[in-house]
Image 1 (tube, helix red, strand yellow):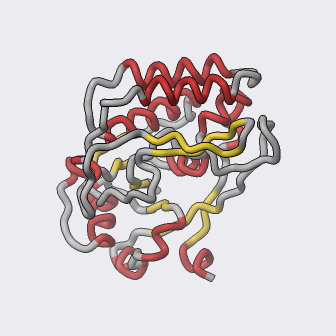
Image 2 (cartoon, rainbow, N blue to C red):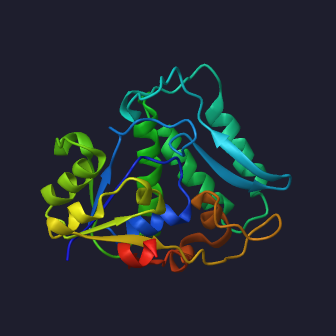
Length: 239
């Protein structure tokens, strides 16, 4: 069974996204999707001594419906320095803060483009490499797969073009996915069954909804053991 995950690029994503990446034989960055100002392409939460804080990459104009791949970063402010300073202060007492900051530096210093989709995908791949998931993975861009149609048809087309027989997705897909269309094509649809496994955190009660940088700073590479959620078939999930 060949598993495919398709998702919009996310800036240093939460653990739930890593769990999808761990299960994927083929991972597709869907930068052709419309940018959402309420999404996570350019922002993520971190825990601080003063509560949860958003790290947000500033953007130039991103009109409604603009594809993520066309959205540019606004470099007129020192956002990299601010993000790093926030992380350094928030995780100063975390046992693996140096490893976390080294990873952030690697992402920032090696990035020479101006598209938020490229930066966010770079951050995802860096975290993926840090945890060294045991099975081989293949990364793709939706632009290389050249599929057309409705949202469900495009997703199915990408899965089929990669030889996939299982499509793994997060919970947001329940609002638009035409599950019967996948069944007719012989592709099973499974949703993540998030375990939200606790691990030692700074700054109060545990929350799973922060950046995976939090896991790295607090647990290091042993955090891979917390990236372990499985899936459930779509009918069971919708019930």
